[in-house]
Amino acid sequence: MSVTAHLTIKNVTRQFSVDSQTITALQDVSLSVTEGEFVTIVGASGCGKSTLLRLGAGLDAGHQGEIRHRGNVVLGPSLDRGIVFQEPRLFPWLTVERNIALGLENAGVSKAEKKRLVKEHLELVGLTGFAKAYPHQLSGGMAQRAGIARGLVNRPDVLFLDEPFGALDAITKAHLQGELQSIWSKEKITMILVTHDVDEAVFLGDRVVVMSPRPGRIREIVPVNLPRPRERTSSAFGEVRAHVLQSLNGTASLAETRATAGETKPVLPRPAIAAVG
Ligand SMILES: Nc1ncnc2c1ncn2[C@@H]1O[C@H](COP(=O)(O)OP(=O)(O)OP(=O)(O)O)[C@@H](O)[C@H]1O
Ligand SMILES: [Mg+2]
Image 1 (tube, helix red, strand yellow):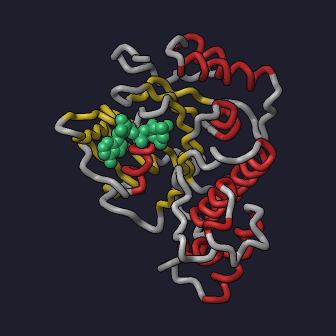
Image 2: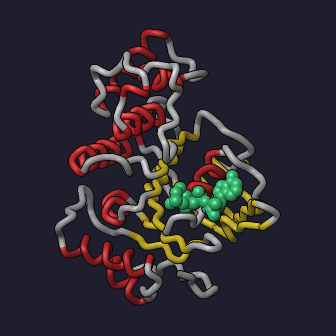
C-alpha cells in the first residue's frame, strides 16, 4: 500500500445552529487516510459520523479546518468521491436500474457499457430481477442494496459508506461485506465506512476510528493488523473487537491498544482531552 496521504481531514470542526443553540457536531477532528486504505468508523448515535462523511464527500461545507483529496481542497461533490447514504435515497419515480445508472451520470461511458455495468451491479447486490421495480416495491434492505450498487458502479477514487448494511439480515450482510472487501482489494478504492457493528468494523477496516459524542471527536484509532480474509471466530479477532468495544465505552488504555492490535509501531495516542461518554 502506498503511503501517500490520499484524504486528509485536518482540524475539522462543524457546528450547527438549531433553535438559536449551537451544536458542535465535530470538534477538531483530524484523520489522514492513505490511498487504498479501508478505514471504518464507529461511535454512538449523534457523534458526527454522518456529518464527517458528508463533509468528506463535499456534500456539506461550513466547517472550520480543511479537507483535502489528492492534495486538493474539497469544495463540493465530485465523481471521484462516492457516497452510500445511511438511508438509500433512491428517486421514487425511477426504476432500480435507472437509480443505479445515476451513479454513471457524467461518467462518460457508452450506453452499452452503462447497461453492462448496471446489470453487473444489480447482480452483485442480489437485485437481478428487480431492475424494473420502483423503490416503493422494494424492502428496506433491498433499497439499501440498490444504494450500495449506485455508490459502487462508477468505481470512485474514494467511497464513503454510511452504515450501508444496517438494514440487512445477517446472511446478506456477511455476503455483501465479503463482496465489498473483494471489490476493495481488486480495485484499491479508498473506503471509509461508518457502522454500528463492531464486528463489521474489525472485519473490514485497516484501522477502526472510535468516535466519542458531544462534541464529536476521535477518541482513538485502533489498527487491525490481522491478515485477510479475517476469521471472525479467531482469538486475535476477538481481542481487537474487545478493545474497540472497551474504547467505545471509554475504558480502553493505550497499552491495551498496542497489545490487542499486535502493534510494533506507535499507536496514535488518544486526544489529550478527557473522553466523554
Ligand atoms: N443539518 C443539520 N442541522 C442541524 N444539526 C445537525 C445537522 N446535521 C447533523 N446535525 C447534528 O449534528 C450531530 C451529529 O449528527 P450526525 O448525523 O453526524 O450523527 P451520527 O454520528 O451520524 O449519528 P447516527 O449514528 O445516529 O447516524 C447531531 O447532534 C445532529 O443533531
Ligand atoms: Mg449517521
